[in-house]
Image (cartoon, rainbow, N blue to C red; front, side, top):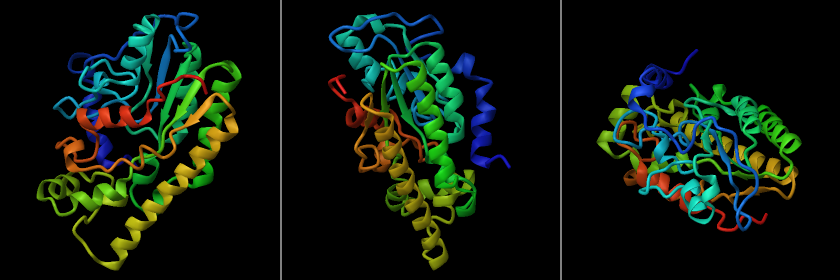
Length: 282
């Protein structure tokens, strides 16, 4: 069954051609070479967080504010920081992240990164695997790991010299902690069924609701462990973010106030800040 909060996303997708501002590049071939170790092409894989959903002051995808491939100076994405060092990447950053994507969607996204010969690939996935309809709807950890491994294997086989960044999953439990006493957040979460596994009945203190939230928190921790191990198994060209995204101390000032879930432009900048490697030597 389609999750209700994803229906809103699907409805607006038809308007993206007119309403959304594009990311850094189109479908042109990637250039070869790099400057001082910096990549000359990149691809972003993941879900609506990486797609910048809700970060442009509307309930829409906003690629320009992506922490990974965005072009907005307000965010200062990985692409923007690399561009300052290596002009050859201009127009060669591609956004393949999709709203509602779960880990099972990663292999197909990886195919697109391979097709464009991306020299740098960012991966942020897992929030939708946990957010589901309820605890029983969460993706099993073994299935999650299998999907991540399959995606990374495609990249490693076709692009053995490309660099991969694997990011941890935002701490949705902390989001509940800071938002369940805010009337606006509670109203939106309840009305639009945002991440129901964690955020349903947000003001309830019943033992069953507390147990449900902790189960989601634990599953996200397990996903993060799987992501870390998958990156380690990949080899020297994969970098784990060290849990930095998960450790971001989210406040409601870092999320948009349309769904009180996705990062706003300031939140996207925070993601870029904590994940940017600085040196591309791993």
